[in-house]
Length: 480
Image 1 (cartoon, rainbow, N blue to C red):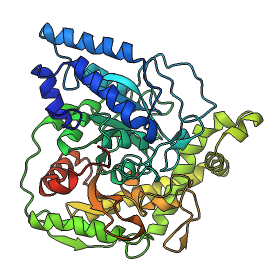
Image 2 (image 1 turned 45 degrees about the vertical axis):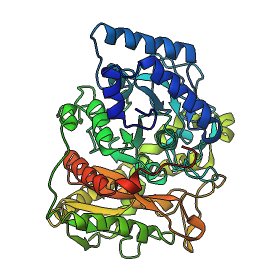
Image 3 (image 1 turned 90 degrees about the horizontal axis):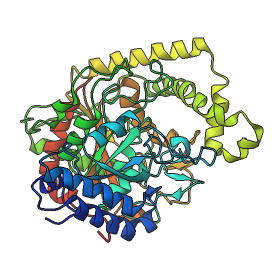
């Protein structure tokens, strides 16, 4: 066994068979964090090492008594710094948030703890989770695992880098506008946005309207991805729109025959989405793997005006993001400490009316029904997980793509809104690396979008893709 490079599944088996102790795993984890984190800045608010070793000793004592808490027994974990974990500050990447630690776990953290994990810290995120670039004024920027001069993506950027650099065996994150998919693609790991309602988020001020963001898993293998989802998922009465299915279903074997599965290649939506040179070619080459599995690939359009979809998206985003920023804008002296992009979101929300939101809700419904019809022709839809390669870590956001100007700070990530708006499951799988030019060697992800609540079938397909592409997927970042 070579920890920390083995899978989380292999680590779980090694811990339970006592090939390695929880203390040894924690010691090796802390060594790996000390080796890589000072450069990449992925994990923040690191807990006291002596306390972590004490918790590891407690897990070992439980195993000695024949007691296991579950699949994550003794596994080190760091939780995204937008979610609550008792004893750790929830900074949201903002200097305006309290420095006192949370007193209770959020639902996702409590479920992972119940399965035996040991929380070692938090993973870095952009301020308020806004923007697919994980930098903030509290902890600084997280750097890409493959090139420390580039962005890690976001908002689950710290999680993706900690995973890619083998500081953690699996990680959690959340996804509103690609925040599990974009950093996964840019750090050469798997990131899954589950179906809306699959992973309940608690605590939550609103359980009815706020149905665009969701928490979910990230991993270096699809099996690990599914195992973590099995722990995170499941109905909770405090989240009335959560899906009434036991998460344990995702811990079952993923093997399946996909011959004849129809894959629709959305690409750049017939030129609507601008993309950096090489992004489409890299993803199209990865897509050919499915042909070797007997899955026909058919280029297709979205079939609905993407400009209309974007306008619908903007209204929903105003409605859901602005109120999150509003408490921090209540005092004039705070304004200078709120990043410009967040202030813009707040100001945009002030212009929104109830009838506009209802109209956007009707638009979202039309889009969902349209996507349902599209899945009568296809079993899976595919497109890149990002429109650009990882960019300079010192740039706030790309202002243009391939000569086309971006009119908002998030327009460059438009490619991820379709599964979000329709509440569909989607997975970013490693697509490979830029072969030449200024982006040579940088990773890209391929986004696979599944049918409504087709999370398990999507995991099965991603697992088959992984088996065909093991050599490419098992490549490690420099220095690992």
